[in-house]
Length: 105
Image (tube, rainbow, N blue to C red):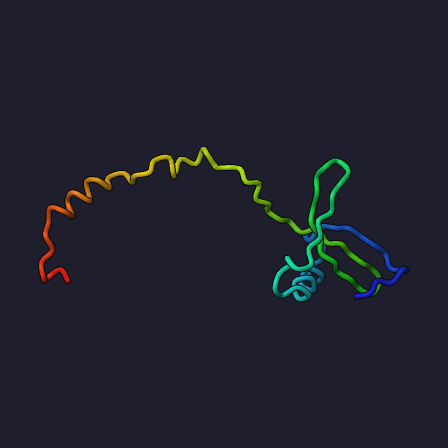
């Protein structure tokens, strides 16, 4: 898409577009935004991601919410605190105590 110098240029959030415009943006990028997404760095050190969207009279840079993996460990989830599953030893002992019979197969 070539941009016309007379077109308005607007940066806006995807959520601020009309439902029709949102549908057009989704149709424009049916496979997602990853190939066209641009990172915009702000002077305060923060950033946001945009995708281009163009109408007859306006060139939009549409802000897209992106979850960025910051690499932080989720130490407080407690899910992987122990290497062994609770009760695993008891299950293993019970399984070893019983010899499988031909009926088990």
